[in-house]
Image (tube, rainbow, N blue to C red; front, side, top):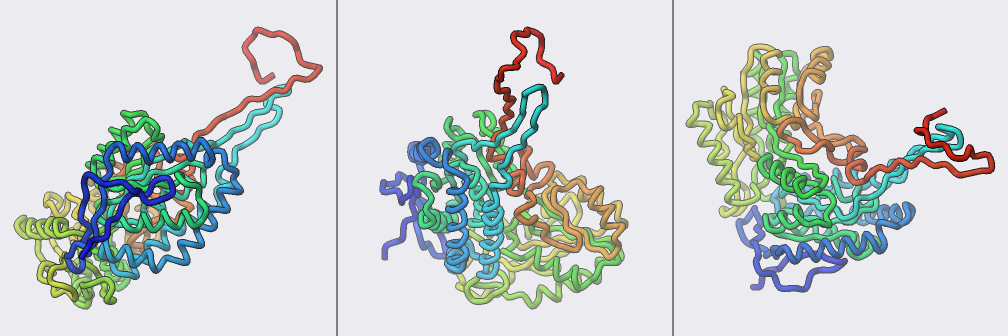
Length: 499
């Protein structure tokens, strides 16, 4: 039985070359290799960049806003029409349940919706008669070829944080998706083709560090957008900026949920389970630490554990609550953290290593896991685990909980659960984190706001999507204009002033 090969998308079509190297693509629910994916060489990445540069200079960079919006609206309708098919591809290769995959596509579509209004956001400003006969106005223009490097956990949504805005602004794109679940990017590329996007405007190259480095160092790539772990985000930022590129690199997270004693216990327990175990914890916005202000911890842990007992782990195509992890290696890494938590003295309330999954025995299973009495020196607290492991840290006061959040090197997302509006308002002002939820466990902003964290969760100054996204993918010009008329003042060698 032959294995399907996923290859690159360059200049509006599937690449027809022969790859020097390939990787395996698994179905995480069965543990079986289902596809092979071609890994790009630097020469093949250069070919995609060349195609993107030609498309930018020949056509797309000079295209009218009207034409760009026509293509964008057609693309939006195609994604919406085919979102179930796209979600099925994501479940097949990532493992998340179908409802979660469909939610991912829907959140990505919000950015496409936002990009459909780009004409308003690309407008400049105009000041008439700033001096005698002098007007000043501003322009925003595209960068050229932009690179996007996206992670495995959201193979559709995360690329959609970037490329709709980049393309609407007049740029051309080279996307390097995760090699673990590459099919969604190819499906999207074909939807762009159907929408009438010119060849070369949207390109996809697959691979590993070789392809990443080729994008980061290519002289014709103007910017790079990245989402992934903090060590790699730092590398991407430092390498890209050293080669003269504009870089936004979104890194890791350790998201805390601060629970005050007056919180609604049922809402809090439901939210902790949803945010901790959705997508098997493989979310940069997952809640992985509950900071329980005493005396709420005992009741909250009991409520969370009772809800965990009803969760069904298994094949995401069978209506289960939580699917497998993306690879066997990643499953084993997360299981290693569970073992480390036990060895370091945390109380293991629910052990996900003992899960009876509804799926093939060879699937990459690890069930929801709950620790109590975790301390800040334990690896299950300090590290981003990126799996279904929820830790409870007990603190005596609000101030102690706030200090815990602010002392952590990551600053991506956080949440507070309370019925006290004053406490919530104080928290949103005092916490040193980029995205905050008040009785909302996963505070991912809508597309017209921007996504991004603080501290070691972001390298670069610009967040994803929203107005900041349009600023990242464009450059500003300011024009000072005077048109001569018969009353001009003649030669004057003095410094020009506004009078």
